[in-house]
Length: 91
Image 1 (cartoon, rainbow, N blue to C red):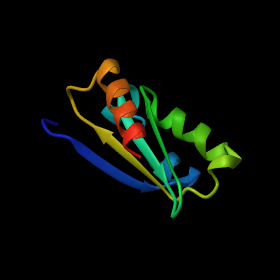
Image 2 (image 1 turned 120 degrees about the vertical axis):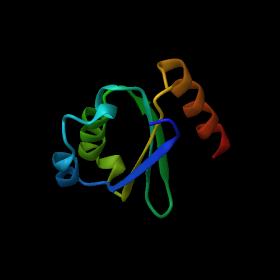
Image 3 (image 1 turned 45 degrees about the vertical axis):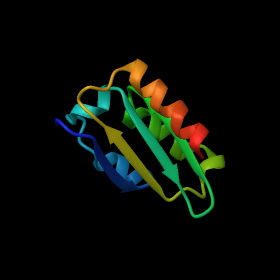
Image 4 (image 1 turned 90 degrees about the horizontal axis):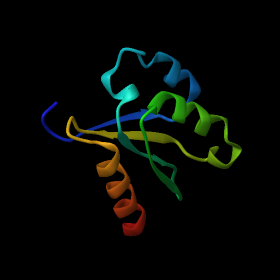
């Protein structure tokens, strides 16, 4: 992975169960965007699958329809914090 990659899935618990636990990004700094038709949530995490499972259970996120994972092999915690802040401020 030498370029920025964005992966999109429906925001559903059953989809999270299908994501392989062997995926590189599951324990790696990433940025994510959860969105519905009128709202979005931007975040960063090192534990993507665990974080998404907590969002799926959150009733405040029930109107969100998609989860977008943004990953790059050169991401580190500092970079993801910085980019998360920039995205939040942009919107």
